[in-house]
Length: 179
Image 1 (cartoon, rainbow, N blue to C red):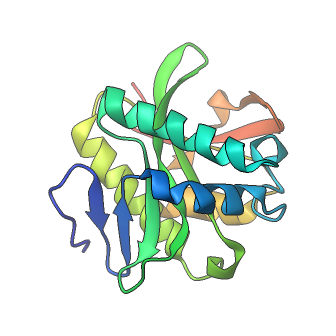
Image 2 (cartoon, helix red, strand yellow; image 1 turned 45 degrees about the vertical axis):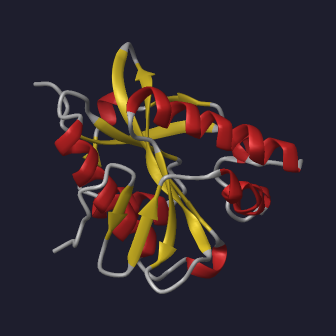
């Protein structure tokens, strides 16, 4: 069971702490998003200039200010080092408002179940607070690790929603779809 705080901008899991991003996270945002390995399946997300890290932080912060949720910075409970990011943003999918689940972690944290642990906590949190919106994950067909994270977070394949994305075909995984 997750030990989750009741603070709207912090989440706790067994091994992780998730918190709302702050301006001091800009370097980590840039570093993780400029690593070619972290964006291999989503090359349009890759950053090449430090200023882009600040711009991305500002978009994330604006989402938090407008809606009271968004992307979190993920760290181990016993560390201040940012491992990655996980959260949701509101978007349109085939004319339907949805919460898009996002997760991106530094390579050194891959294969440890951390993304799945963070994503599961995020989906549980947002499903309680924004129950009227489905949660989806857009995953490239070749990205097996991302597919496993989506499933661990409680999402299921929703083939009827698959769509063309910026970087190719998006397989959709979802929960809480309307009947």
